[in-house]
Amino acid sequence: MLAESAKNLVPKFFDETGTTYDGVVSYGTLGKDKYWKKKILQQISNGNSFLDLACGTGILTRKIAEKFPNAKIVGIDITKSYLDVAKKNSNSFDNISFILDDAEEFKLDSKFDCITASYLPKYCDPEILVKNCVAHLKPDGKIIFHDFTYPKNPSVRGLWNFFLTFLRLVGCFIPSWKDA
View 1 (cartoon, helix red, strand yellow):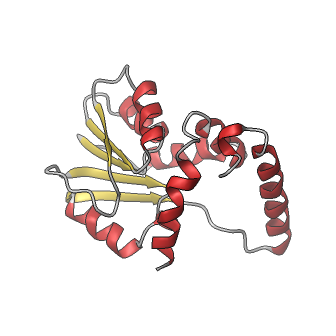
View 2: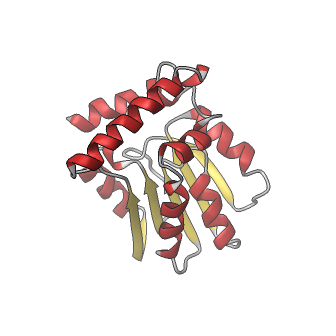
């Protein structure tokens, strides 16, 4: 039931951080987030319909829309403030829609060529998540999940822990991240 307790942290951690998330994720991943998103896009070769789960502020959603301008793209997130930012940042795209919903529980009438999710698996029950994704996937469709793991190498783990401590200290000076 770790996933349930992790999911319960989402509103506390993310509700007030929508407007600063893009910058924080860039710094927090040492710029690797852009690289990871690029790698995800390289895995998508075709399609007319895409679902981006845990779309957050729509970073990947917009990248998919840029690559597939004639496709239908749906972003789902559980955090309203993030969707507000996503909608604002995506208003120049006619092919994106956003839905406030839970990745494990959403029900849509559509099926998709590709379903993506970044940083989501640690907040969900993977079995429930995959089952719901498969129910919304077209035959021969593709599911791409992306997350990062805790470093196993003790030296790298020490540097990572130091970096996270530093980020927490910096976060104390950003009002929306004080309680995150």
